[in-house]
Length: 110
Image 1 (tube, rainbow, N blue to C red):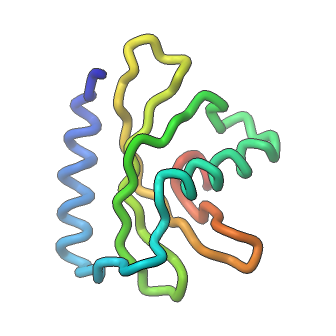
Image 2: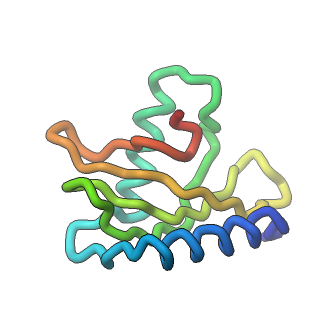
């Protein structure tokens, strides 16, 4: 796997943001890799061309947000379509709703 310099820069920005805002660690019911992957795939099924159907979530680290049942998540992912398996990063807001988990921002959700 190859890690881009943009990914390193985004890691730095994320750490500054989390450190300065002071999010509390999520406890218990935070999103997992499987939860975020399923939420992403549900969004992709809606037919938006911005979604990579080959995207695979690798890691998820979440902190509880200021809104009830929302989490700010640092996500690493790859695309099965990328032969170099470049490791990419994004920050996404993931929320638990009455219909299950959903992406509120990030990973192509605008």
